[in-house]
Image 1 (cartoon, rainbow over the protein chains, first blue to last red):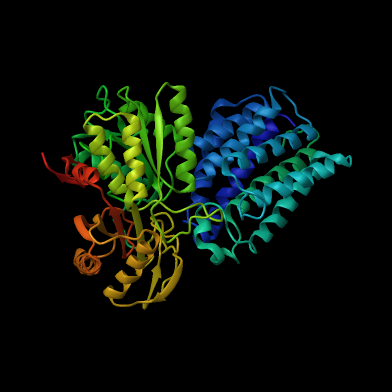
Image 2 (cartoon, each protein chain N blue to C red):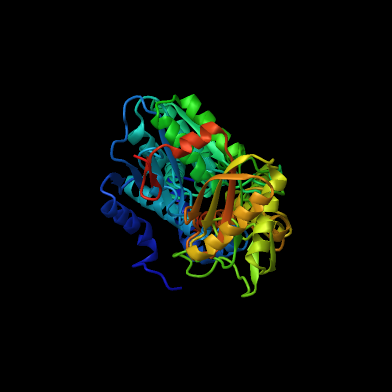
Amino acid sequence: MDASMFRAWIHEAARSVTKNADHLTRLDSAVGDADHGINMRRGLQAAVAMLDETRPSTPGAVLATVGRALISKTGGASGPLYGTGFRQAARTLGEDADVSAAQLGAALAAALTGIQRIGAALEGDKTMIDALSPAVTAYQAVIDTGGDLTNATRAASDAAARGLKQTAEMQARKGRASYLGARTIGHEDPGAASTVLILSALATICSAGERHADGNP
Amino acid sequence: MKKFINAPEAVLAEALSGIAAAHPELKVDAENKVISRGDAGRRGKVALVSGGGSGHEPLHGGFVGLGMLDAACPGEVFTSPVPGQMLAAAQAVDGGAGVLFIVKNYTGDVLNFQMAAELAAEEGITVETVLVDDDVAVKDSTWTAGRRGTGATVFVEKIAGALAEQGAGLAAVAEMAKRVNAASRSFAVALTACTTPASGKPGFDLPEDEMEVGVGIHGEPGRRREKLRPAKEIVATALDAILTDQPLDTGDETIVMVNGLGGTPLIELYVVFNEVAAALADKGVVVARNLVGNYVTSLDMAGASLTVCRADADMLSLWDAPVNTPALRWGS
């Protein structure tokens, strides 16, 4: 997977989050403060603009740029959380021009660790962790059994989507939703929902990349 | 939705331009979205920086000026500002004596200010952070993000700001800010939800005859819903929540704020204050100073919050010190 595929991923994620921004904001108005879709759209569109302007040439540089853009433009808790996730992922990829499926798995795991470090959320707290953590596990399971990038990213995206569904049954313990306690039960977590969109965009790009033999969707 | 706006996405930038036009004594950095004192960066003075989502005006920009904040960083509506903004504010106001970040306890504000403090340290600026968490409607437990920061922010900014103006050092100013926060409790009740310019719809549905008890300042619903009751009973509920958390004794002196959430007429706030004053007098608690008005709003939400600070002599004396900001102004 090269820098152009990583850029394509972020373009696709921005497109998907923009398309679903109202849905994310609706989820957030049930349990939070009704700004998640707006913030994520602003952050990812800024990331795309920065990528288009600077055209970083390695996967690590792409993700580092995305992390910086999200931290400086998103606001709210999502900016530092996602921004840190992308920056930690970038660090594991170093300066390699092309990264393997196993390296991407390590990058996703590093993102998870970074987000948990600053957000201090555990699985079951009704946060983005409830989508990201099972996704990292599912991705690794596919790689460990000899699966390829397309299958691994699809498994990650599917696991995240299942995790998101489960957040509806959870009571929020982190962030602004935690103030509502039991009243959060019955609503999906907006942060987990945006994580699903980002991981689903990754799966989309990877399966398209397989169809295009040149890896250049 | 009926609002005086041109475009939802332009509200913050245009409001900042309006503040700049109305208050030439302040500096408004439109690019970084920082409002600072005209004389910011005075050598040897500890600088106070606060910030948070917009929609709570006059908080925080309306409290920038002599005796209060040195700079404020407004985020988008109900969205925390970003670290770069806070760093720009710290750089604009640091006079070499350090910067105090006054942060309301919300996950987004805390995370962004934390990143900003790291960036500022890399730039050689000494930063201390004080969290404000006075809202007793939220249980402070490991199962929540902790109590929210609301009305006490005004008390912290005023009293710590006065101490900094007198030339106290960073540690002393931070300590005073923590003392004021620890001595303050708040509780709010909403009669309607608020509508953000971007969403255009009320944040929650509240039937005509109900109120949201323990509401937050971002349109986040409160801890329970009840049928609307007379002001006297609503005040009793709020005061009970506050005094259960922090009992007050006969003779205790307090600073009390009855704060409108944006859509409640001042005459109703005085009805509320009348009840608060009577209830506290019954308990022998002295309301030594008070504020009645719109200080920490939630856009157009109808509702009110009550903040009670058990004030010692130092706090009262600093409260009386001169202040000259757009929203709070007394002394000379």
